Image (cartoon, rainbow, N blue to C red; front, side, top):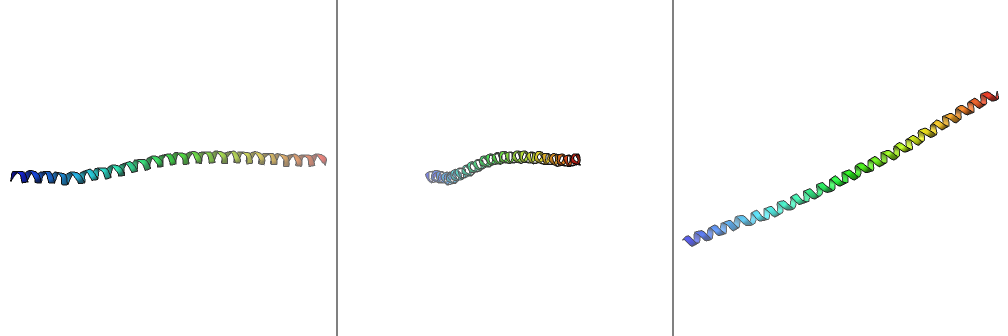
Length: 88
């Protein structure tokens, strides 16, 4: 009877060890996948922020150029009006 008890214990431990090992492998695979996705998301967010910053800088530069052109146009209009007054 002692041998059968020992055999049952060995069988029981293997029956519990195998699912535990499989669960650990499965869990570690999930955690690795989550970490990889998090790293990709972090890199994507950094790239998107840089892209947005570049777009905003370009829009700001374009706006400044438009303001400068508008000021030049206003100056031209004022000079034309002044010229008309001088011609009178």
